[in-house]
Length: 266
Figure 1 (spheres, one colour):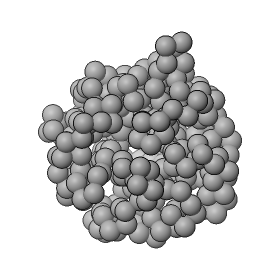
Figure 2 (cartoon, rainbow, N blue to C red):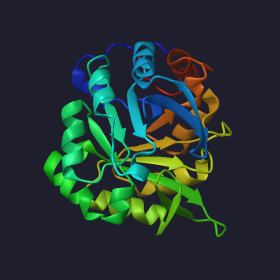
Figure 3 (cartoon, helix red, strand yellow):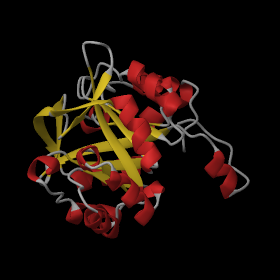
């Protein structure tokens, strides 16, 4: 791992533009699952145990995504969120099936630091403004599942990449941030689970229009793909396959990023 000189103050540490490495854990029921294009799900472990492993390896943040919650109209991660929050001490984002301010309240009380909203926000955008006013923008993440269309644009999808919204993904991201989202989690449905690399065109199109952090997800199969995501404009890259299938540890990934010139949190 790249050695960094110790900062003189906590403020100096906070101001450094670290390349954030995030573990994304998709959850169905009690299981950590992984698929391709958000489909064909395969069980790969238990979420709390994996989150603890990645925390011990040095992960910067963890995302829990209940990938069937929108389909069933509820998020059922309260117990695993509470258990995880008691064991790891990095930011924890939770998404999937969040439809109301009560849902946000419940998950934050369970131990989540941020909540990610996709389907409900597309159906009622004002939810983002209400949530940001109630809890602060720093707690509200706009989750966007984008898929490239034949004309070259990207469309925002709902229900774990199953349903079309008819909205241009970039226009929707700009509106969501204007409504109060303090971070964007951008998932390429086309690349998700493929290990063929991130959608660099999508990242490069979104990053310049944002004034909030951009977390990108979908397609990282090697350390070089993660480095490319940062070069394209991402503030953080969420990885799944790389960690879930033991391709490399968090420490190994950060070491590779450091050697490529990225400054990582030690």
